[in-house]
Image 1: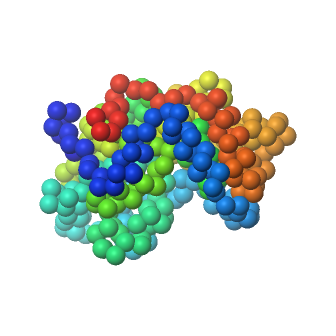
Image 2: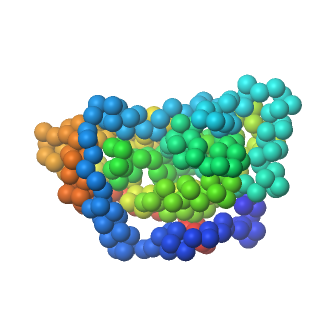
Length: 302
């Protein structure tokens, strides 16, 4: 999956239901999404839940790491020979792994372990994450309120910007798991440079020109006519304001619930009234969104 567009091969998913969802178009997907929200159970709101949600995208190492038994072991902390072995082990053709761009919680060892820690095969519980910079795109807030109470990440075009991100080397099982979990996202190929950090480039993979990536179907939250970047994710030469999660949720709350509502009230009500508030917030956010468009994007299956 790292060759030219002519050589590119798409991942093969064995579950017909997953492929059907990936190819689903509007308005059918919106109907599916609202039906899912309507079936969500009522949940108890707590400060712990609010803190967890607004902590998105959760702790992200400032460098490349190997996910190993619920923690990220920094690649730079390994012996030089072991570093070389790790890169070869995870990126070699024989590994059967594919590179996937991680922009939000998928760049967090904590978040990855929640998704992969239950697998029996040790290979499916570990991975290599290469730290670097994504060129000409930034990482913004989606026009979607996630179930944990945050606006997740999605990319948007931003010429000249270099945003911090990770490339994950995934087994087929891990890729399938992530794709099931990324419900309101398209899967596709992004044709833009990703530059790995110097410590990784010295070991071989200096960068990529094409990568798999998830792009949110609802687009970027843009109540002022432009996306908002996620302040928790570093980037050079940003072209739009960067906001934290509470600032973003305050904006959504005012639009959906009234000018006196704030982030806590929004999340509390989303927990207590998932169907009603979910539908209301979806309607408001879709009306205040910029859909994703880029000539560097090729959606699955090409």
